[in-house]
Length: 571
Image 1 (cartoon, rainbow, N blue to C red):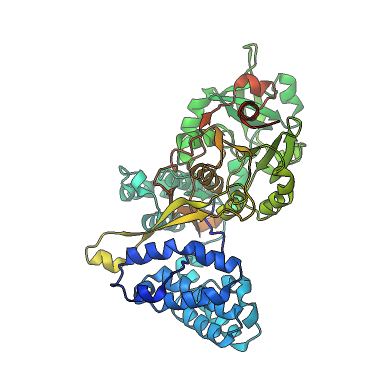
Image 2: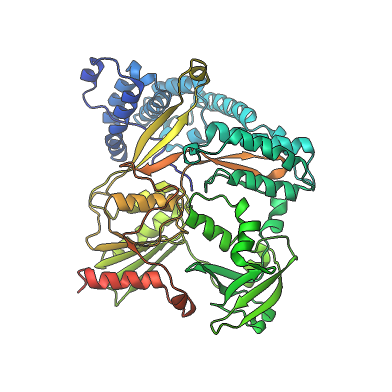
């Protein structure tokens, strides 16, 4: 989900030949950013190799360039990292003086400074504590302004009309000024929708009903990283479901598992049985009427997956649904099932939970299978590194990110660095630069653009063939991983298109304890190709089949094994 650089806050770039650059004609802001970006890899290399004595003079030259210091993000990054360099070289007074200057004119998250080990050499200095206190005071003041507790009112069964309107206005305003993808909704009159939804939120009779309307308002932007989450107190009223897990296979809703419900099992509900109707409505009609309007998704495959799987049967705890099924023989039957809370369902699910990392050898040890099921935890990199000596021995490798919903893109980049012989720029990102004075002057909106690289790890690289398995459940940071894998030509992508949604969401509080999220970052392939809204496309399209699903076979994985046996140099 989050787009977080793999190193501390690098947008940082190395300038070779700094003195000649100083003699050049003044650079424009885009030229300064472009030059800054192109030098990033070398400065990161120097930092990794702990050659701070070489990096610091370069940073000094950058800070001395007026064209660079006129660009806010360069001004911050260059000075911050120069302060880090001074600290690492034992030049405490210089580090403290620069850090004090930064905190005086920039709002800095104090936890960033506290966690940055580059400042370990100055932590015991009294001046450091004063600087940290000043940073914290400015940070808290900013947070009070942008995320005022006034709008984060506590939960109650029915919010006041004023709270409901304030929450709608909060989401509208955050999206108006921060949402990255209005260009993908050119026909959306967002102000008109605000006016349209005002009477709707006023007329809601409960906080539960209000949050359903708010989720629909967020879904108008058609973005998987832009949504509304209801308060904790309402989770069971939104997400309670009957005691079954369902899957979407070849466009049909199939039962994947029955969770300890003897009545359902006795009625014939089992793996592979098709769900064809809910409360007397055909399953797709039910989803279109009661589920899809509140589902935030960037692509059709993601919207369909969300609406026809884990969101389909959600609703209030203990409420009942009439479910009509059809088995393999064509027999139809109906059951009535009560919704259970997510906690109750988890207790009934006796299967071991899917781990973040899986590694096993297939086909007599000739194919290594690695499932990367999340990038939310830094330990996924540690798990991979521990298994890497065994993984690289296999002549072929299958990487599986079909169940990976995202996390930190930097973790995926670290893993990919082991697999490629040559790195490079993999994604280009853009963020809006809203400057109110420029708007008053009649100037258009600016965008900041930069590329994000993946570096090959020296002495590593995988010599065999690699197949990456993707599907509509591959999202966010896992899609960044798939796009990087694709553009670096690390191997073949096999399976289905990914979910088509990545970016950096901005989170903010809503009245009653709910949360809003707005995507603030556009992401594309480094060569300009789009995948947000369409998904990263597989080279070999393989879709799971109903017959294989009912037989317990993994169509996609078996296809990958067959491909490798036919093409990989497996002896």
